[in-house]
Length: 181
Image (cartoon, rainbow, N blue to C red; front, side, top):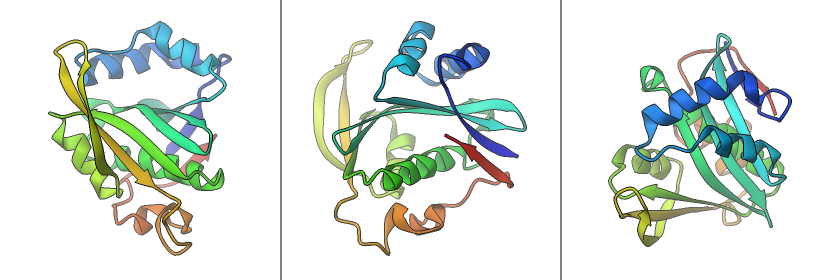
């Protein structure tokens, strides 16, 4: 069973070790444990943990402000990749965006991270710019991507009842989804 849990100061300590494990396995310049603690205190931040049969397998962190979302972090444990869990996390973020009448979603991704870029493109994100030498660990450029939700009609995108199908992405292979924001 899949569930999505909103991290808050009251529960984040239970999951921080696993979040940090996933973070360090996923990124060459990982966030610190303290960075995640600060995110759950930030009023514009939403840190959601993805649990499969009670075990944390991934997370997404995004900021909602001024009618827009900034996706700041998303990761799935390497051993759980390839099962649609990244699709699931993005779909749930899009559902959240739709429920808040969000106009656009923004993100930065390493130029070299082709896997992530393809995933975002599958959801309709487009490259809108570059940030030169954005990543300080190796001075790699960031690709800025955006998804303009204001241009979507009610029959498109996250406004449909079944967002995974609306965005033409497969649902995650585990079934019986239950969400808690």
